[in-house]
Amino acid sequence: MESWPETLGVHMSQFDFLTSLNLDKLPVQCKKITSVLGKSCPQLKWLRIGFANFSLTTEDLLSMFFSGDLDTLNEAAPDLPLTDQLDDLSSESIHKAYHQCLVPTHLLYPFCQTLEEIRINHYDSNEPYVIAFVLRHLPRLKQLETSDFEFKDYSASIRALWSFRQPTTIENLEETVCFPSDSDLITLSNYTGTFLSILSCLDDTVK
Image 1 (tube, rainbow, N blue to C red):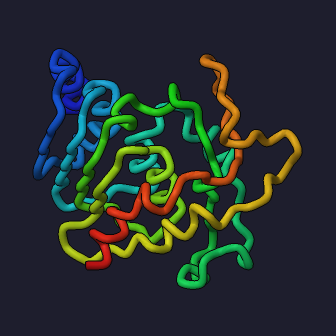
Image 2 (cartoon, one colour):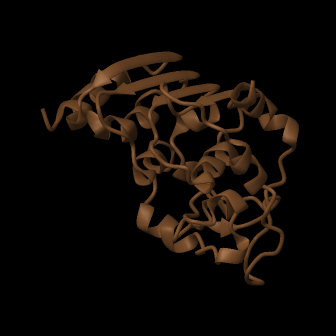
Image 3 (cartoon, one colour):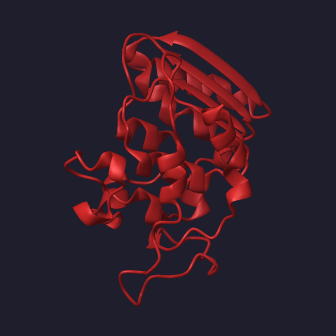
């Protein structure tokens, strides 16, 4: 059972044209499937994953899309001082500024460039900066749901995308600078996308 996700990934890699996938009631032993789907289904547009009786952690959600070393990403993401945290999260003790991080495309799974709809039950956290990281790196995303059981308001994540204004060091690159094809560099930069590019996510969550 421990090797089931990897085995499934091998079989799914034979269907690299797959655009829609629905997996429901997965047991906890299959949690690792989240890090297999991205490289196995490079053209996936619609993804629904339903887990049975457990929630994804922050690291689980990041590993669905980020193929690099999570320790490296955590080191690159600054800690947010209390004064920089959003009002509705002032009770949280630690926040990592994932929304400030820009990673090269090759450190993201291929389906990050094609995904339009994601439904996961469920991601048990109110941390907005992880969701903001996802929104920033999935350019075609139109709908995001992380719970089948309760209302999720992503407006804090959307606001967080524009909350960073000044690079922390002169070495930080702006988003308009292209990464070398083999670069593993994670930079801190402002989000230069438009509100319209993620408006449908906001609309779906506030209706």
